[in-house]
Image (cartoon, helix red, strand yellow):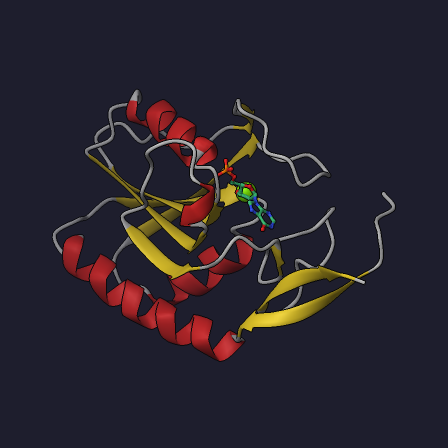
Length: 178
Ligand code: IMP
Ligand code: MG
């Protein structure tokens, strides 16, 4: 895919992300202290770096599973429907579930994913997002745990892509067209 030339300006450093994750895990471990069956579900592909860092901070007994839904294509537009491209491998019925998302934008993706997984009768269903752009919200969704609120900027890095690129950046940067 070709795209206009752009530069990436750092918005959140790797160090800030790591510090925020430590604090978030304290909250999560307090809330799920009694669990013996937490399934941490990463939404592919954007959450793969976040979930890797998140679970390595956790000492609760957990399992990791992944779900892939379609949201954005290779464009900066949100589609309004969510389609399951890759389903969970395991069952979540009667289990505690934490959905891990990279970024909540309009809110459609997480709203739909949450509704969908709720139908499978988990014991508890919570969500964590690394980033949130509240000014872009179109539906009433709020994650239970949040890393950072950010302004309406297109961001990349730390697992998050622009046209499949830049996922490997260790920090969060904003895209600036030049
Ligand atoms: P929503 O359904 O509009 O909330 O979109 C959420 C999804 O859009 C996220 O999982 C991301 O994959 C993608 N997304 C939203 N904002 C950005 C961005 O700034 N950079 C890259 N992907 C984004
Ligand atoms: Mg995504």
